[in-house]
Structures are given as structure tokens and as C-alpha cells.
Length: 232
Image (cartoon, rainbow, N blue to C red):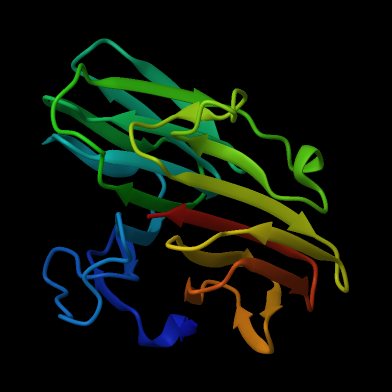
């Protein structure tokens, strides 16, 4: 089953400094039919103005993955972590028992991010933060685990839930497959380009909610950069 959620139908908000689109219910946007997808609770598509950002605020009991599409995001938290994550790279914050953080675009141009929240498999735990580069050349033509709760994904940033966040860059006409398996769900968003999945076209920044599929066949209709979340 594939449910396409066109970008134009997403919820959202215009905060001036922040242009936000929500694939699922978030903040003042509420749609009872879009409360999440399995353990995936939030997928926000945010555009942040230069020298603006989210001031310090708290989180707990959530795995928060930030995929930077354009520009860079600078993180600081009450644990003393500080870092800058550039386009194509990923940061992960395991909120655990509680963390207070700020995220700012300190760049001269807009920053665009996907912010992905996944429910942890258990509450609590020591909060943590990490960031690492994932060069696009290293995921050319194939899906690479960027964040994962599975031990076999040793090169991915760790998350505390049996899920994966994967990325790929595909040339037009190129295809890659992903074994999803019974009882799993996937949510795919092209950061750019357009892909076809079982005859359904998914354009840039559309969402595709996928289930009841053993193997997912993804074909690029244009040069594309895709992000895929695999959850229970």
C-alpha cells in the first residue's frame, strides 16, 4: 500500500523567520488521519531565515533526527554539546530523561532541514547528541543508513528504537531496492527530484507512506536525493 501525500496538501505555518510544513499533526496543525506512521511521529520540512532559529527549549523521550538539505544548522544544548551540521549531513538527539537545546541558522542564506521524530522503544535514558557527515558520493545509487537502532548499521548514528533513517542519491533512470519486510512501514520523501514507486510518482518534498510491501523498488524519474524512514 502506498499513500502519496503531495507537498501542497501538507499542514504548515508561516512564522516569518520559519516556513514550516508538517507531514503529520504538529503544533497548531491537527489532522486525526495524520498523527504519525508507526513509530514515526513527526516529519517537518523547515526553511529557516539567516541568523534565526529555535531558542532554547526542552524535549524528552524522543529520537530527533535532523537531515540538513541546504545550508547548515548550529546546535547547542545544556549538556555542553555544540556543533554545526552542513547540507547532506545528519544530527541525532536522543532526548531521554530530558534535554534543553537551541538550533540556529548562523549562515548568510536560508537553511532547509527535514526534522524527523521517532518514538523510542523505552522511556528514559541519558540524553545524548551526535552529528556526522554522510557525503552524497558515498550513497550514490544506493540507500545508506544515516541513523539506526540496529547493531548491524555500525556506521550510522545510533538511535534508541528499532528503526532506520536512510538516504540515497539517484541519477535519472537509476533504481534501488530496499527490503522492508512484513510488519514494517516506510515513509519516503524526495529532498529533490522525483521517483516512482510501484507506478506511483513521488515528487520533491511529497511524502509516501508505504506498508504491506516486502521489497520497495524505487526508480528515479529525475536526478533525486531521497530520505527514507523504516519503522515498526
